[in-house]
Amino acid sequence: MDQDARKGEFFKTLRTTMARLWGPPVGTCPLCNGPITEVQRAIYFTPVGGGSGRVFRGGCSACDVDFHLSLTNGVFDGWWPRAPERSELTSLVTEDELTTLSKKLGRYHHLGANWERFLARRRAGDEVRRYRSADGVGSGFAVVRGGQPISQYVVFVPL
Ligand SMILES: [Zn+2]
Image (tube, rainbow, N blue to C red; front, side, top):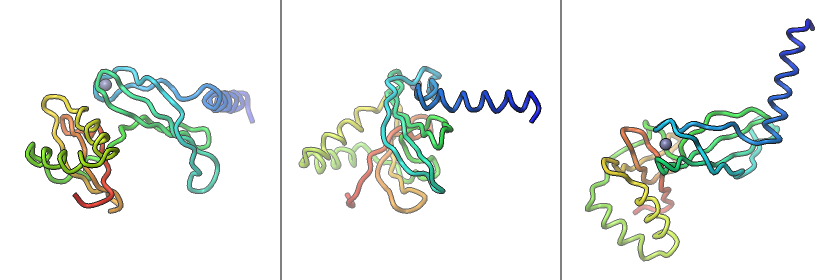
């Protein structure tokens, strides 16, 4: 191994160690370029093929959007909004439908509170759309801002 390669290895190890010790890199919100703050360690997971993984959670307070970041065997991927993909969005939900859904969900303490929190994230011009995940397992509603899904409300029973 020549000196440059050795140096490269050294810095790679250093970056990995620093990531493990001090947590995730500072993220930038893709919607407003503001900082992603209030970063917390969320869950541990076992990656496909073994090793260790961890998910971090953070948010942009300017946009009121939550983000996730995963660390898989010492390597971070990018921050992504906790929302479905654009390609998974389906029909638009009208204000009338939202009112009906709010009434239905309002009967359940926990579901209703989560639904209200989900709707409260909307800003002028945002849409609510239904979504169905590409694997067909998950479905629910997403707040969409300028074509970008920014949050989700997962449903487990048909509404
Ligand atoms: Zn933002």
